[in-house]
Amino acid sequence: MATTHHLGVTLVEQAQAQKEVTVNMALARIDAVLNTGATTRSLATPPGSPAAGAVYIVAASPTGVWAGQVDKIAYFDQIWRFITPLEG
Image (cartoon, rainbow, N blue to C red; front, top):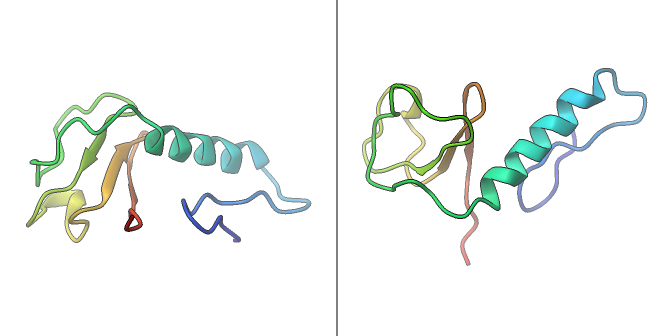
């Protein structure tokens, strides 16, 4: 699937089934990036009961579902999703 260059938002394709899923995922990703800020950047383990829409910056040596996601933006949208920030 095609994505935008900067945020990696999945684009809707012509004649795509269930377009609402793609659009809603894109809106959640945009919402996470345009959020007023991350809750913290000192957690390496995901919180047990994150609030919907919670945003974190993954700390060094992450564990659990955050493993391998150091310095990425983590947001909770029923599952953990990650955004690799661009420099600048």
